[in-house]
Length: 462
Image 1 (cartoon, one colour):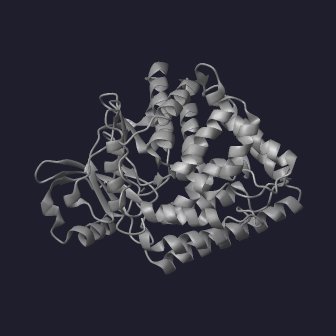
Image 2 (cartoon, helix red, strand yellow):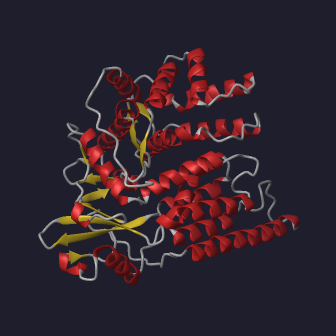
Image 3 (cartoon, one colour):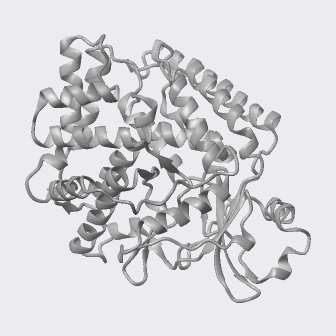
């Protein structure tokens, strides 16, 4: 929904299950061959490397290329993996996987026209004065087009790739199997609950009527928030696989990283993003769980536009209350209280030995460091991501802690950690502790103003 950027690279989206399975099978085969070649190089002494032979930069590039061409659940799962990859993959592999967050080609015009006919009928073009066939954004589940309706409305149309919704189950299962074969996912870790949670979230993101309800709900939650704008939904053009909303004019928030913007502007944006996270956790109990730069726009009037609610996540009041106690115990350095609530959440289990439990508590304290700092925390100069990565690796290799976090925490962790990374990219200074104190105080007050959860028409973007 930017002012002038367009996606001009096109690639057909494989729509049938058999075709998509063939792509994943091709990926697994290519990665296996790459692993054979890597082992041969190592045996020949050409490139000594203690890592797994299949976890190479070349294989990561093959993974990215395949998932980028497939889009849909396969690419989305790869993006989720990329957010966690620093904890267990070589740096060069993690860097290549990170490109999945930005890489996506557009549908060819013929495939796009077929999708539009199926949704709006054969005479759909008569409903528009203008329709730009070059998308202004393209991501894992769909692409966005600018259009002007015959009655003059300026719309942003999110159009889902064909075959995405019906291929979620098979895409996720087949890709998880391929990644296990390639040793990208450790074979002795039970990722089942996390994979099922990913499927549930992907089903939600693939239903654009559900996202429309989330947009309305989030706009209601943000009433009185003058610095944030959520686009309105246009029901007469919205279907299960096309979402029509107001076109917001601006640039991606990432542009704030440029030299033409001031430190004060970056600090203001980061402070707003982190304040929204805390309101989501402790006031709304509803989270936009994909903190990607592309999901926020810096509007012409200085406001921030929230243009993607497909990853909306309903968090239980009980879990949010436990996170509030965890954050409070952290800023008060109360390790006994922190251990109690970490056990309630499931970060620590009864089987944990004392040393492992201590390491987990140390990691929680590390992850909440910005909230324990007095005054503005300098995200740009902090080496927190590297230290957190080192602590995570220590849990894996020194304490043999190979289990993933509780599935219900996945999207809260993703939102908080991702927002910290956005703040770091913006080189922002934010008084995170003051924001947290204000949020916890506000959350303790009774309220009857929280909107009801959005109602989905079924199992519920790009």
